[in-house]
Length: 605
Ligand code: AGP
Image (cartoon, rainbow, N blue to C red; front, side, top):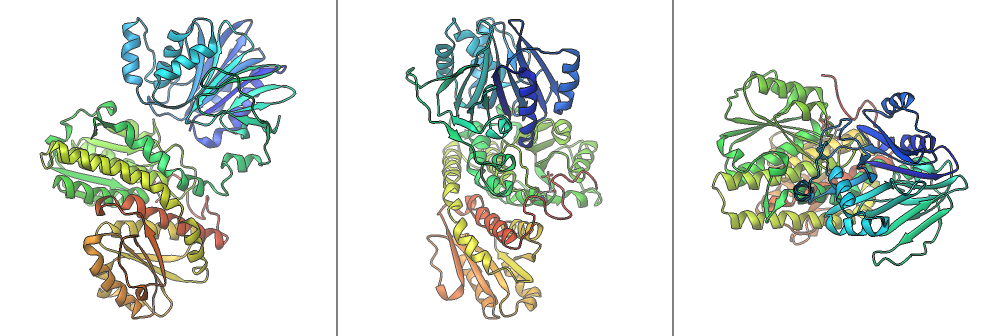
């Protein structure tokens, strides 16, 4: 997510802003910038890359003044660049933003007709010019009017050129707090940024507007009336605050999945149908392909395994999935009618990047599903579908996986529509069910206490099996990777029907088996496989839908998921697997966010 800091008081604003932005670096970013009132005028300096680049630029442009705003940008719309960095300015104002403006294209067209021009690709510049067009000398009124025109989530920090010494802010969806100190007053995305100066803060509620002066803060509610705020005292350490109170980034990111899915999927549903027009992929693009080749590593590859089943099931288009490090060396058969889809959270994985380059050498169009804007894979692909999960800090990928699934579901429906496999009516109902299932992910998070109790059983185990059929098999692969990489428990994922062809010899009394049985059509078969392992003494954890009728005699534990169609169950079933792994790792005293031997992005082959 982007980071916002604003300050007005008795100290040099630049020092406060840079210190605060430094404390927000954990949020992930790819450019930064500041605006400061200098001699009564707003001066702005921005730089792509790390904060050090901004500091180097500022050495040439010293900004002296006691009021300003600063920003670290996690790119969503528009590559990381000086132009796209915040703040975005007009003659009247300077603005920083955290969030996504969903109707920015329409607003940009309207503003262009009013004579506005644009220098960046960002939704934020559009928001700044919407505010500019509303401003007639009353900041709060202009902000309120601009907010009524914007769709989506935002937290804005604003300086108005004719209001020196004052910082304004509003939020909807994206967090923003106000902190009060003896040296001056702050707005910030996270209390972490200013803990060295004060622990006294209050949060802005949706559509509340604040004006900061060196003396204090005035807050107006959505109706324009002033609001009295209760001052809170932050008891967190800096690190705790960066995790928003969660004990680990991984748990925070597991809980961010519903929001991440909404931010990634909803903006790509237009008139009830998947659309990638805003991503630069026109309707009809997929008609020309007769095969899809998915390439990725690790968790991203597991998402690709689900994506293959979704696309083949809906579009009847053949899909292959390859581990990137193998793909390159098997001399693959590729033609320009193959669409190569590379999947990568970081966009920097060396094996996946090398596979992308091989595909391009063979003349294949490459579509990348990436979470980090401006990453190498994003820049080298022909087309990019960004996921909007926000920065994923924990080494174990969770929310990035879920949003990759979200993109694959949209792709499957879109391709099926363009290939004439389904009519618009069925595509709309599938899309509606996708959005409905995303809404059910929140309920899956409530299973955490149950998974904690089950994980207590796994403290001394030496091996474990995940078994499943159909969509449940790639989910078992993901669950197995999660458990291995953070709890160091050796485990294997097996297609439930395959276990009896050898591996069942390892199932001895007391061996835990996690049986994923969410596929209604395959439930009887999976139950048979469960009975096979149970007959050999396995302790079974059954993960199934709440409507499934399963004999309590076949499992030691049962975790029930909200009902959804077989096709969309992966969005729900991955959550208990993530939570099981998380709790097992914590109980075993493992370093959950930074497991041994692992890196967040594997940039070596
Ligand atoms: C997943 O939990 C692992 N950290 C790892 O398998 C990861 O998914 C893999 O390295 C691919 O990373 P990428 O998505 O950034 O390309």
